[in-house]
Amino acid sequence: MKPSLAKRDPLRLFPCCVCSQPREVRITKKGKPYIICNPCGVQMFVRVDTGIRLFDALVADADRNDVWKRLAELQQRYQFKCPKCGKTFWLTSELIKTSWANGKLEGYRCPDSDCSGIVRTEKAA
Image 1 (spheres, rainbow, N blue to C red):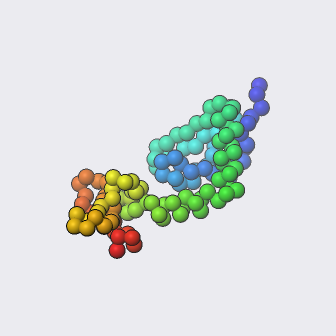
Image 2: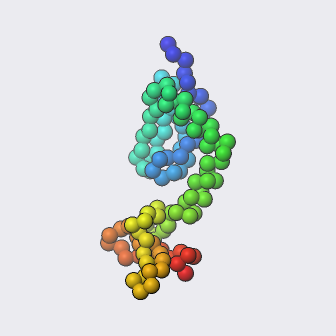
């Protein structure tokens, strides 16, 4: 029987690949790490030894380099909330709204096709 490569510390956290919220790294009966994010419906299982070693290094690096602070900064910069419908979305180049008169940045359009909301930013003000 192979020795388990995954550490059995229940306090290890790693961000969900969809919502970026910290999720507990759990261990299967066979000693392999996995993450479940119930709000997103994401399940991530790491199956092979090489992947488990790399994943363990990422989890350790997340705590050591304060990935939570870096993710919060990214969200502050690139995640917006529509003032009209309240939907939260990430900035993409397709959502940039410019003035037809002078081409200056006005803000970012809500990605919901039924909503005409525009998030105005400091740069656009």
